[in-house]
Image (cartoon, rainbow, N blue to C red):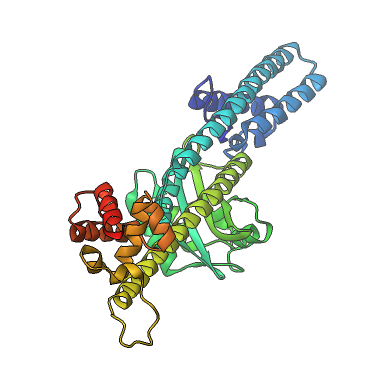
Length: 370
């Protein structure tokens, strides 16, 4: 049954039974056996619409009153059931959009790309699909990075393992190639008989139809999300294609944010390390005394006797800022060092000056330089 009835005022299995029974009756009354097939129930709303038309034609051609009564009763039931299915479709799509918002909100809480990769198939399952695959695209090859299979973790593991050993390839698998070309999700029906799919994965999962959507970052397709078998049916539909497309679009935005945050963190760490190394280098240079009379004039404070003469050049720099009432973070920004380095310098200069705190150090400074 089509998953448009996934969340309905009437249970989905009840709508399935009523649709099957009615279509069987209409097929017998109208002599149209195509109404009573498994494929007919993949889209019950459309099939019941065809059944209505067949019943109306039957009424127009039938002259036997008893037969007309049966046709009329079936037509009434078809109209009632169609109304229920349409109501169910509205409810289903509203519920699906609410679920989509919640899934994307949970994904936005991820702090690392590795966490996001593992979480994506789980969220696709929460969106209503039994199996899900998250793949990365590198050149023409695409390889699964994570997977989910309801009640079958071994299948999820095997999908990633097989897909990694035998990666998909653009140009060989038509659906994924089409997704990259159009940058739009694709619905693949009857995958078992499609010669242009990844048959190792399709056969392993026994997939009949599936949806594949592009993961886009900075205008380029960098991966795919796949889903099949909605929990309320064995199939996926055009609505699932739209839903997974929206999911992939939101996922792309989340991925860009996390990648940017990780790059910024790495850059910050690199700058902090460079500042530390530079500070240590300057500290070493500051420890050398002038070796000749031709050397540039030293800082006047360094030539004073007493505790100030025990301070290094950088400790003197820090002390000047302490006297001005600057915080460690402000001093670090001015001297291009880390706050931790400033904290160490402050601790050392307090010890050398015999001061208990910053205020006492400032007082000692004024006393010694007055």
